[in-house]
Image (cartoon, rainbow, N blue to C red; front, side, top):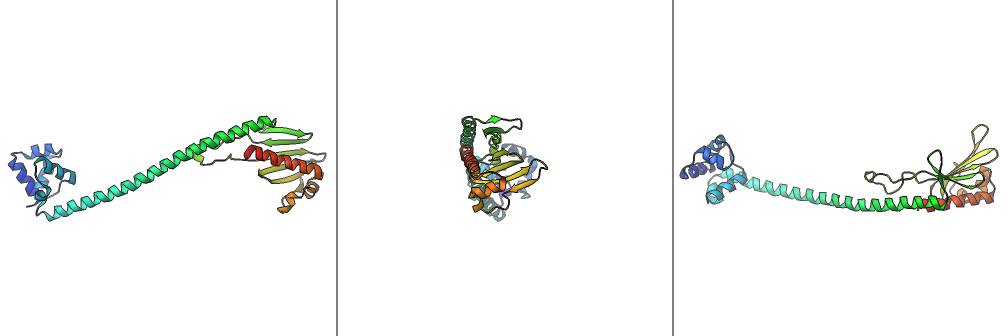
Length: 245
């Protein structure tokens, strides 16, 4: 007998109409009719409910219905397959959430540390906010060091450093303005700009790596004495380390 025939037999033995049987399993009367005529089959969960409700083993319920047995087997395999997929998804999701929680803790700890240190260094080095929104400090006559107003990028920017980690030095000489920019520890670029025509009259653009440690050559290029150049660069390196390292 097919599953449909067994369902019809069970229903009639229990003196149930198709409407009564349909109500028991929350389907329509037409669905029961389709089951009994093998036009469609109940799903796995419903088959188990029928088995439990009428105390009939699945073996008897499905006996001889090879199509339904195959369908039942396919559903079991499909269920196991999807269960494995869902398990993998759950594990990946848990790892992502766990990683994000760890990153969030590291981010806020780094944010507090960097922003707290930045504020502290502003006070210790007597930096004051200027009209351009930067913080500046006059080291000596004509020499001014500046840093940007810093705050950490947002959590979802996935960065553990300030957007811009620079130190600037502007030197006002008789005929030129010298600009030095530190972009990393002991890494800087410099240029001298004429006050008369705003043209660059000195630059480190063609310097080799060893040239940046040659204070005499650097001073000659920018129009500053070797001794003063050494002091300016050492101060800039010191400020970079204090603010950003």
